[in-house]
Structures are given as C-alpha cells and as structure tokens.
Length: 233
Length: 105
Image 1 (tube, rainbow over the protein chains, first blue to last red):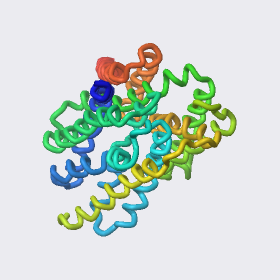
Image 2: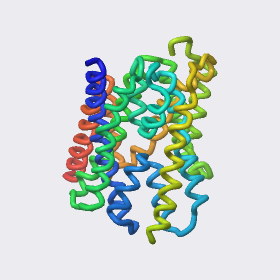
Image 3: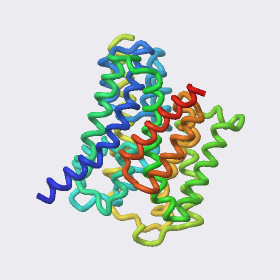
C-alpha cells in the first residue's frame, strides 16, 4: 500500500513535467524532420537518449558523416551536469534504492525529474519510477507528434508552448530562492555569469551546453565557499 | 543517411548519455560528509536551471516582450502557488495573450 501510494504520488508529480516535455519534444520532432531524419529515427533518438540539449546538438552532428568523436565530446560536455545531479540524488536515495535499481532508473535522470525528486526528504524506488513514467511518455509522444504533424499548429500556439519548460524551471527555483537568502545569491551569480556567456564577445561563441555547465559549476562553487550548508542540507 | 551510420551515432549519443547518468548514481553509495561537496551538490541543480533559463528563455518565443512578461508571471505565481503545472500553463497563456495584444497595437 505504501509502495503503491508512493508510486502514484510520483506519477502525479510527473504530470507537469510530461506536459512541458510534450511541447519541447514536439519542437525536437519538427527540427529532426527538417534536417532530413525519418519519423522513426526521431522517436528512437528521444526514447533512447531523453535529453533536450544533447539531442538537439546530436542531430545537427548526425547530418554530417563520420563525426563520431565530435559527437562523443559534445554529448559529454553538454550532459556532464547529469553526473552532478546523479551524485546529488544518490545522497537522497533511500536504503532500498540501490544496485540494479540505480542502473535501471538512472536512465531517467533529467533536469526536471531530478529537480522534483531532490525536493523529497528521501527518494524511494517507487516514487522515482512513478515520477519517470509520464515525462518519458510525454517526451516520446511529443517527438512522434512533432515529426508526423510538423507545423500543423499555428505559430502563435507554438510560440506560447516554448515558454512552458522555462516556466517549470522558474517554479522550481523561485519558491526556494525567495525563502533562502544564500540560495538567492547563488542563483543570482549563475544568472549574471550566464548572461555574460550569452552577450559578451568571445564568451558568446562558446556552445550553450558548455557554458551552462561552466556557469552552474562556478556559481555552485562560489555558494559552497561563501555559504556552506551545515548538516541536513 | 544510411541506417548503419544512424545506428552508430545513436549508440554513441544514447550510450554516453546513459553512462554519464547511471555510473555516478550507482557508484556513490555512501553519504558524503564533506561540507564543501555537500554544499556544492545542494546548489548545483538550482544553478543549472538558472543558467539554462536566463537569458535563453527571453528568446524562446516570438517576441522578447512576451517572453519577459511570461517569465515575470511565472515567477510571481511560483512564489505564490508553487505548483509546477499551474505555473507552466500560466506562463504559456500569458505569452499567448501578450503576443495577441502586441499584434493589436
């Protein structure tokens, strides 16, 4: 009963993520088709990789023949943040969430799934499995819909859907940052750094996957040095 | 593109993305006691999301104004309500409406 409840609670927590993913993967599907991929290729990429930034840069590399090393380097730099998240999540996984379960469920560590899971006191296997279901479905079906339907939606609707994922990010950051002054300061550092990488000459030529990692790591180091978290962080 | 080449690319992309998630998750079994590392791990998800959102979100929609209004509404509702779905939907509706209004001006 406890396991079932926890799975269902995870399932419910995954609904907003799944909705957000629908719109993002929809645009991924459209982009893949416009680059010359088949619909099943776009869907297969989404089902096996489950990452927005990595997939976008991945398909732009795939259209050129034989750039396997470039592919590996781009994926490693864009996705290295998942390693930090995985370690962070490992600290909250409960005693039964180990071994094969980590190998299986580790596949579903995305920015948003992580962000929701990390807000839990303890992360159980059942909660995390439930949490992964709807985002995974949303990501897969959104890609399929985007690949098949293409630009069937009016431009104004597409435009509005594109803000969904960022609205979700803001909903994760803002409530906590307004309660904790140190976190607010750390987030502000990340924001300023990120804008510098976006607008300043030289810095703006660095790919977004790398600059996100650099800004995030730098700001978190600043936070850890100036505002170390005591026990029970 | 031929299917063999597609599959090699897919294997590299999906394989590296999987390992980068699963290996640290499975490998770190103990509680980390080092305060610096604990603090770093506490802050990193929020800094990642912040760096991904700003300023990229301002360029996600058809107009920077609609995106800015959408983000502002999202922040306001997030502090007030906290629910992810409500915030995401409100941001979308705000962008849609503000682009409609901008179109009228």
